[in-house]
Length: 87
Image 1 (cartoon, rainbow, N blue to C red):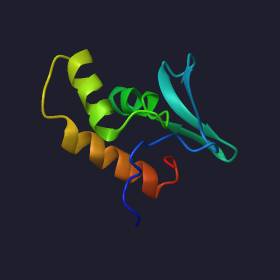
Image 2: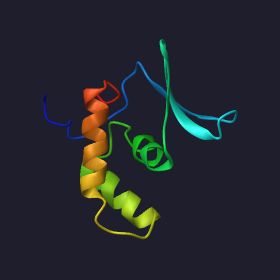
Image 3: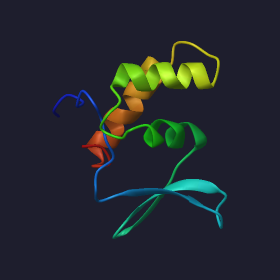
């Protein structure tokens, strides 16, 4: 698998949106939908192709007043890349 891009972004094949019916964030794509937990949604909301991995981590750590999120963020983005969510 190729390394994560410097500035990860959500693939154009997917759309991130909040689903009122399920009270959660989902990734929509032509064949279906992926339900996301709150942490995954917060990470993917920041994958706009402009923020670096470090910037995403810093923003999340500040927003949630915590430290040490880099391994979890990187793991989710690597899994997202494997699944085709991340370009």
